[in-house]
Length: 373
Image (cartoon, rainbow, N blue to C red; front, side, top):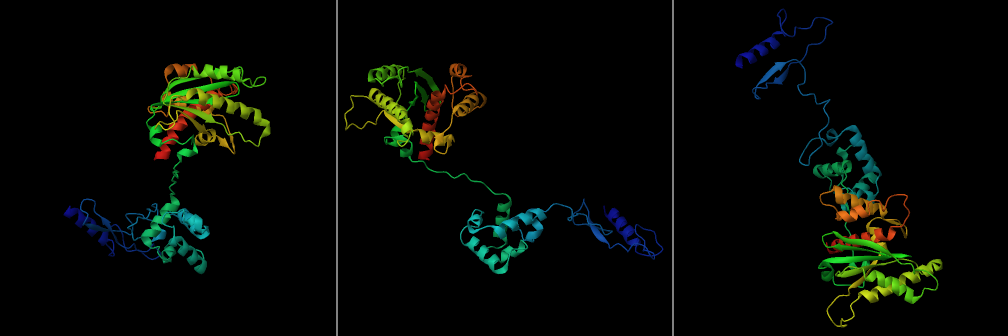
């Protein structure tokens, strides 16, 4: 090793003297200027340096800039590419106070100082000039710049109040202890229900035609017959969740439909609620209302004040039950086979009540979980 270093050193230095052979001779008249000796780091011994011609061993000019770290003292402008510097300066020079507050570390006084500084001194021309802003030194500026280039989107978690989707109000502990619920949705000519347990498994899911709905003069006996037929088929559960429609009283054209919904709802409450419970007993009501709008918002089905079809969402839940290891909802094989083609595009809206009943059950458990977190 020592011999090799001496050889390279002597050969490189020999070229500096006239009349001697070497790697680099003294330049003649009109030739290129003499190259300045530089040093090459020996790969075998990091302490050794071998003099060579004027070549940089690490070409920093063509290497991509390394992003600044919080504890780095490198010039800020050298840490970012030209495009990155342009993006950072454009945001800092043109953003309002509220927009600056969205950037990490720029909330509060820092954003105010930044706006005051650029108003007084003009727009920032270099990244290094940003550290002149009070409270924004090198370490803070690096965090700000990196946050501008790589913004982190955080989902805002909103705690949902139980009363927003369940009526009447029930102590949360009763709902959380429920082993299973039956979700019921009434349509204009049928009633659908979904029996789902706390483990998010569908135990039963079907609907029944009600031929006397919205016929003739709304005979109470005819309604009672249809609703009784449904109640006789409903499975036992801890709670029965009945959809509360959102038909406006101001829409007089839909008044017959609203009257129909309220009549069926009242009958379901009367038939499903136990009659032998004393008023002062510490037992929650067995039949509850769930707001239709709350379910629509939970699944992103609302367009303004109107709710769109949930068929696509149900198809997705059924697909995930087969394709994912931990699906959002578990379907028995017989129900997947039964409703495999029930909610396909172009098949009309015959299964809307089925979809709504299932989505209401899923939303009940998920909203209950979100409201308690």
